[in-house]
Amino acid sequence: MRQIGVFNADITLSLDYFSGSSKESVIANLIHEVLHSYLAYTGDNTLNSFQHKIISEKYVNPMAIYLKTYFSMDIKDAYALAWSGLSDSNAYNNNTPNDTEYLMSNGEHITAGEIATIAGLYNLSTNDPQNNGYTKGTKICN
Image (cartoon, rainbow, N blue to C red):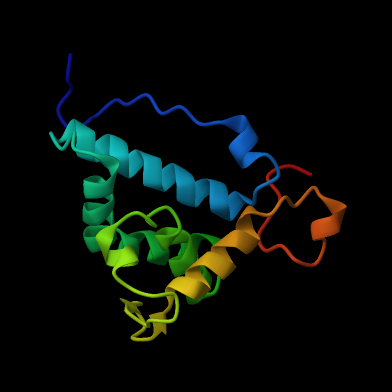
């Protein structure tokens, strides 16, 4: 039974995918999956790629601003994490890696290449000694 102002969703996450990832990366992924659930709840049960189009058009900016504020992170890092799950969207794929098509809330731009590089640093295992000095973000657990 639906409650007014509440939506329920089951979201399944792979522990292997998040093993050693940063808190920032995990939160960005959780927000991304909640957006998918919300879009499905509101009647948009289309393919992921169409939902990614909606997310890229409506939710990247608020998501990046939230990540920047919550984690006190660089705005470019926040946008990289917000865009990182949208690589199959037309907004992302219509640009080559060096295009500066992604406008950030501060008026600057971030390229697809920067998105991949920066977001990747938040996904490298923080538990792997070989990645020491090459990762960004906060460990999930100490």
